[in-house]
Image 1 (cartoon, rainbow, N blue to C red):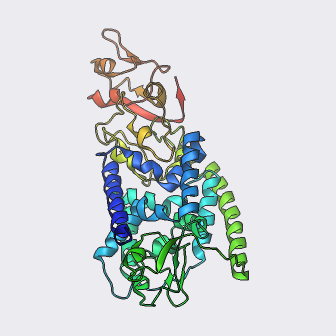
Image 2 (cartoon, rainbow, N blue to C red; image 1 turned 180 degrees about the vertical axis):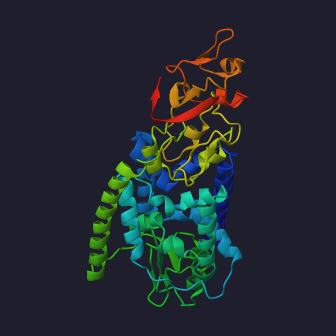
Image 3 (cartoon, rainbow, N blue to C red; image 1 turned 120 degrees about the vertical axis):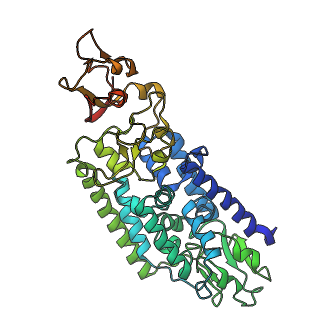
Length: 424
């Protein structure tokens, strides 16, 4: 079993990667993405649904017990780097990598901001968000991914071990895990095969140590060790508080606090100046969406009418543009809420979605040709018309789905955004 452990784990990771890509493309059910760490944490914070909170703690406790298997088997961006490393081979890249402290500072400030209610900072470094952006062909996601793959060529999974905030968080949980990777000094012959093949650069054969904070549990060393000197199991951990660790810990706490207050500021002011933005039902308002959306673009790829667009110079998060796709929000669809892993778009029932006002329609009387097509098109029966007169919109019934504007050939109907979504 030891011999095949790496291949089995790699096969599982490959299946997860394929399912994640298919999910973002809207081909496969997206529940596999509900386990993505940052999205799961955000959903637990935003929705306070017990299932999300419990699932989040299961991921954390699993890491505390068994180490960073999440990074090698569940995270699609980490898996992408691993498969890329198999292709982008470089003789000098598999060397020891120092455990740099700046990842803890990055982790502290971005998660501090997130705890305060804003995902503005985390979305630029979150591995799942970057992966989703790249797969959905977002310029930012593609550029960031290419940069990380360039790092992979020289330093393999350096991003996962020394930059990624999720990796830093899980690394702290895994450092003194119940089950860890270790070297049996009596069996080890110092061939350094494990050290040369470690994608994390976390093995120090000379001192017979493995840094389990950096180790992503790929099981490669475990499988290739000719003397079975690498073992996965219990080992007494030595608690050695040092001045350097104390300084790093204190600095991280300070940055966590700074990130928290920065997040508070973002939460209150980030989208104040935004006007006329139309958002999918369940997003509530522009300020909330700007602070909660991770920009993974999963909803964009799964919108059947193609009206959801990626962040742009008009708005920093996903939003609706009725000039795109079929030009209106399908009345019997709430795919965006169903697939959103972060809770930025709430998972409301279809009935609630059908009664949520996301925008308002207005008729330009000087342009209306009195054809009455908008009356039959409105799914809420909010438009009425008497013979020979222009159509009238009942504001108490209109939900702003945009179907009337789409069908209106003289373009006499305008859809405009509202400050706050509400049930009518």
